[in-house]
Image 1 (spheres, rainbow, N blue to C red):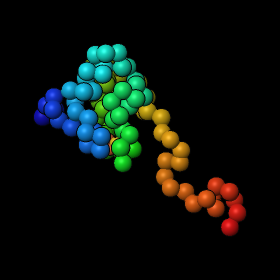
Image 2: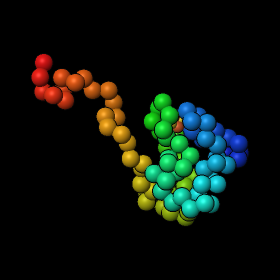
Image 3: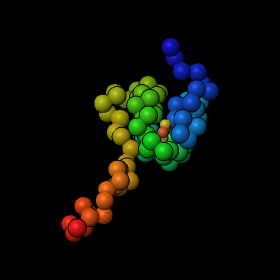
Length: 90
Ligand code: FES
């Protein structure tokens, strides 16, 4: 079943399919641009729940092959890391 325009694609940031498509119509061609313009992928799950669907919408709208759509950048650390691991000290 196709997503409706008001379907939340990114639930963490409450970004709808309509908002993603509007960003693409306004020139967004990468996952990073969609992230910056709509905040999709910037919520609590950091895109784990929405990035595949956002990528699919971008692929369909721009005609890019799905494997050509690069993932957005992540802020480091992606997972919590104990400071002892980074510093090398106990
Ligand atoms: S669903 Fe998009 S950041 Fe969590």
